[in-house]
Length: 341
Image (tube, rainbow, N blue to C red; front, side, top):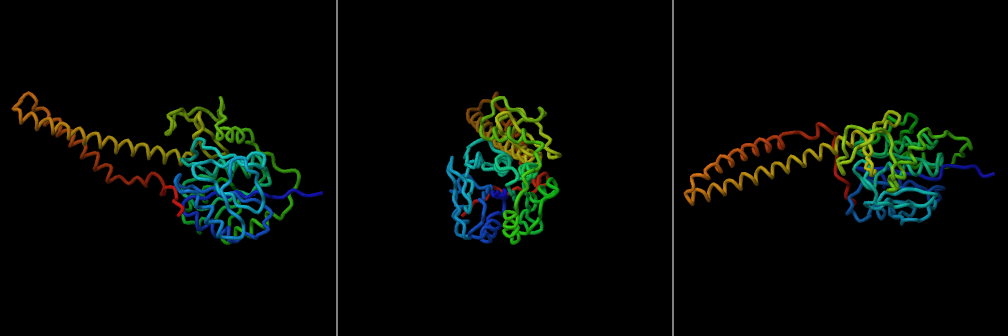
C-alpha cells in the first residue's frame, strides 16, 4: 500500500523575494518528489522573467504554467504577471480575477486553493515581504493539515510577512532560506497518516476560491462592515478568520485589515494631490481672468484677483501638508511591486 505524502510546495514572496527564491531553488535536488509553485508580487509589466531566473538557479525546470495545464512533480511553476494562479483537481486555473491585498497574482488565493485541492499534502512557505499577504492562506493550509514553513524574520529583507504568518500560524516551522530546501525534502519524504485534521473553515475557503475564480453569484462571507471597497466602492464584508481580521467585497476584492489601511492611505493621498492640482488650476484661471479684466478696464470683474488669492492660499496650505506629512508612520514600508529584471 502506497502511503500518501506531501507533494505540493507553494511559496509566497514579495519585496526582496528574488534572491531568497533563487537560493531555495538552487538547493532543490533534481529528484524532488513534489511540484513547486511560486507566487511573487511583481509588476504586471515584468514580462514573466522570474521563471527564467529560477530556471537557471537549480536543477529543476521553472516555467510559467498555462491555464488548464496539469501539475507535474520536479517542476517549478511561477505565477504569470497579472493573473491569480489557482489549483483545481491537480490542474492550473489562471484567472484575471479581483485583486487580493492589492495584488494580482496574490499569494493567498494560491495557498487557499492548494489547501482545498490537496489537503494535508501541501507545504506552504512564506518568505520576505511587507504587510501580511500569505498569512490567511497559510492559516488555511494549516487548518487542512498541511505544513507551514516561515522564513526566519531576522534573515528577511522585509520581515512583515514572515512575522505576520508566525503570529497567526502557531505550529509553523521557522527556517533560514539556506535551511528551507533541506526541510522541504524532509517533509516530502515523510509518509502522512490517512486521518488528518478536518479544516474548520473549509466551506469559507471554498467560497473564497470561487470568488477568486469570479464565480461569485450571491456568495458572501462574513458580515457587512461600515467600510467601502477602495477599488470598486462596494460594501466590504468583515471576516474574522480565527483572529485575523479581513475584508472582501461582493465582486471579490479582498484585504487584510493592514492592507485595507494601506489602500485607504493611497486613496486619500491620491485625492489630496488631485485637490492640490484643482486648486492651482483654479488660481491660474482666476489670475488670467483678473489680467483680462485689468486690460479691458472692467472694474466689475476685479473680484477675480481675490478668488485667485484664496485659491493660492488654500493650495499653499495643502501643498505644505502633503510635503511634510510622513505617510510611512501609518503603514510599514510598502515597496512597489518588484520589477524582475
